[in-house]
Length: 148
Picture 1: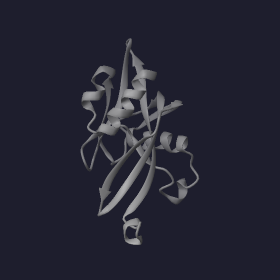
Picture 2: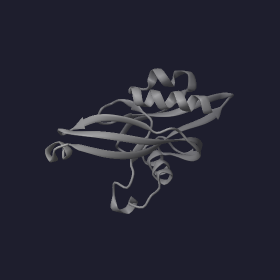
Picture 3: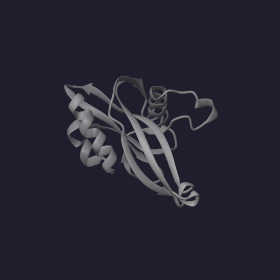
């Protein structure tokens, strides 16, 4: 691989959560609509992207990102298989690996989410797949569904 080609490839690592709650004998899943691309996704964010978070584990990042992006507090129950995909940003090809965790909702207020998300909703379990925008989220949802 030439140096010019190497400089055009970047690797990113993120962590996030699939948060669920049980209410009136029904299970709801937390999904959010991104402010920039308007897609419906599971909350996630870059691992160690800021100096203050440099030493966070995948698990700590996932809990923090869920709280920031949705206002919800989640408790990790188990790790799910990582999801990988490629995308291009400003001419750079990026291979992204996302470590998702299945989480139980333990509190918080979904109206108190940050600017990254324009909407945050609890969606009935049987409506989640049709709500999600991206293949990678649908892929991890299929795995999470087997665990809930």
